[in-house]
Length: 61
Image 1 (cartoon, rainbow, N blue to C red):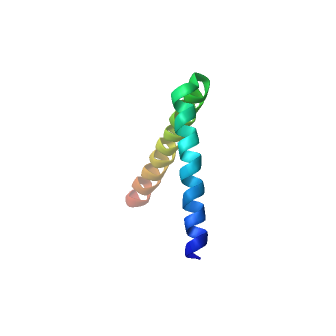
Image 2: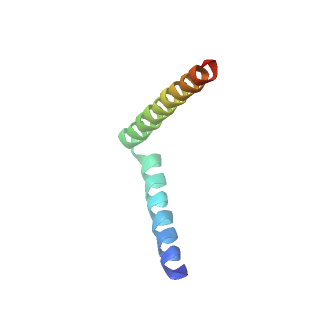
Image 3: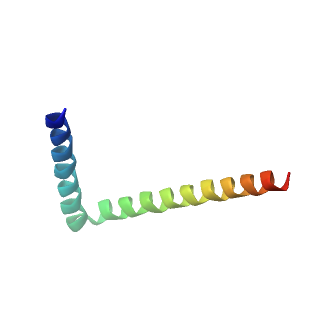
């Protein structure tokens, strides 16, 4: 299992290094990553707002 974990970690490191290199050299890729990060942040904010409203309504009941 440890050998398998090491393999996954190495694979993740390799992918991260490639993505980092691409971020440094590819403007379109950089914009796409930023767009996805922004969308994810908006999704998270919407979920949090929904959950806060839900719990506030439960507290009122």
